[in-house]
Amino acid sequence: MKRFIFSAVTLAALLLSSSLSPSAYSQTTSNGSKAARAHSAVKLTLPLKKDSLKFAVMGDTGTGSKQQQDVADKMVQYHSAFPFEFVLMLGDNMYGGESAKDFEAKFSEPYKQLLNGKVEFYAALGNHDQALQKNFVDFNMNGKEYYRLKKGNVAFYALNSNYMDKKQLEWLEAELAKDTSEWKVAFMHHPPYSSGGKHGSDAQLR
Image (cartoon, rainbow, N blue to C red; front, side, top):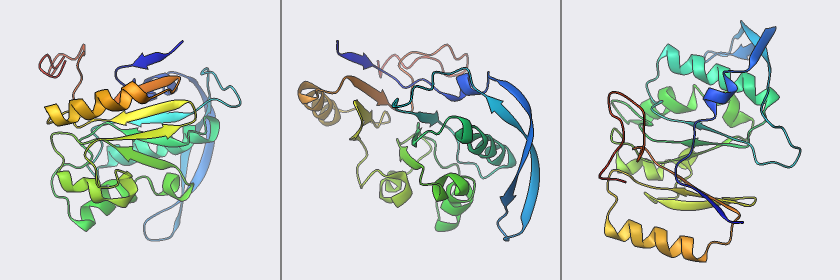
């Protein structure tokens, strides 16, 4: 049976609902010194089938703030218990400037431990993002505003929901028509369906 999931569901909500117990780990800070940070070891209730595809999903992240670093630290912590191979980025990857220093402060530094651990990130564009992000190597967009990637028996479609034009739709329909993957997962910034009170569902995109 072929399955199609229209939008990616954030894994963090499931992960962060799991039970915790005390532990600690040390981390190398940006100036190279060791800083011990108290954290909690995790006990997951998620399925952990040996050969299953494991990935994480995040969005609206690129602030360079302490809160972003806190979430990144939590991702490192959970990665030890749930070894996700890659991360889908749902857009608004950068707020404010997009200079080389911004990419360092708002992406490379917060996720340094994951990047060093060979975790890959795959980005979609949000309304706060410049299209030039498609050329940033660690976003793995390969110069494309929308693209397909294959992981095991799952095909992922990164879409640009800022401009869901005819050309992009024709590309998506053509790719889906020939895709024999068991699972097909589309991810993008704007939600076709949402219970959010501020922005909510994007009826035009739907």
